[in-house]
Image (tube, rainbow, N blue to C red; front, top):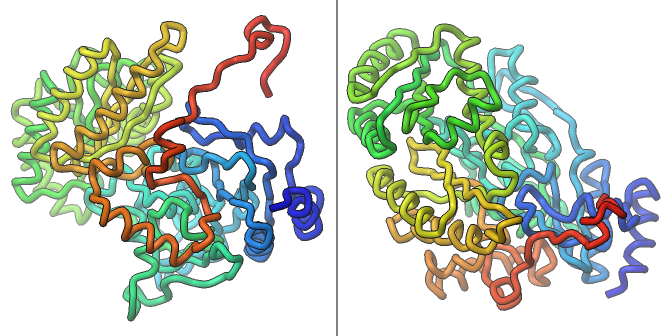
Length: 481
């Protein structure tokens, strides 16, 4: 392996402005949104199109240098954490909406296009892209494919995998190929389904064909307040048991509501223990009938607010989608966890999480996709008080609690670096070996996003620690770029 030779080859293929080598600039890419883990890459490639992505991957394969694809860096599991002697291949220059086809209701986009921009491009045709992660204004479709992202409306409409028709990918040896096709169902092995959600370990996406849906004719949204998270969880179970499938059911506890109210004028009750946001959409007659049933099922709510119009509804969702960032007002340091429990065990899970937080002396705010049991506990901690290790242990314990209760380690954020060591809690040795064999079929050399998803002795024995400022930085003599 020769990084010097690789640098020269990448410069020849991508141009001088297609490669980042300056040590200060390389630090821009040292982590994703899970900032507790940081590794500075050796080089960062900035390809402009699919051909240059393939050239960069082929060069890495030739010199046996590991590489990691990176989109907007909004991932929350350390999935885009670089390799110290490796290359980051950034896809931020691949930002074209190539085509919107209103007849076949599909769009072809490059991986650097943001999730929300797909819906903006399709809006003039009365269409939209339904998966909507809370970070949809900044997260990119390539990252959504890597993590199989969900969002508030995945209860009714499904995750990213349910809305992808085809992807163009560069395999780890530099070969370009297409998985999927124009028809919604392809003959043979479902390689597209196998690829989506593999966290960038099987190749790099260079183009995505997504399904588009017609904008719903009617949308009704309410916020119901409850005296406890258990009562709110019971209401979720009652709604689904009644045969109502809302577009979304989201829950926030009081701590999350405090943070949101301080950041956004969304009008949530500051005194309620828990708030449910429930949204129905579809034909007008059906929505009105179901909405009447829904309000009756919220009889135990201490108060119900119904969105007056589209502007009021947008305010409610602005508050919900701002929750992760808003929690920074309560604590500048926090872990965002992502696990799933059976919907009928929501109340039990939230009670256990509160007990675990009290035992650890750590606050936990809860804001999550209640309809499908996808929890997002936010574990707040103080670096100054030396709480990082306790908070990290609590965050891991919460993820493993989800498995104990019959759920899974991740609903949409992925395993990445963060939860790789917990994988044996959910999968047997044979399961993990089968997954590794699939990965090896795509990447026999192990160069594509190595060290992610699967537990390794290095990862689980010597986990990267949080960033510690240099004494000169703490004294104000130098600045960190």
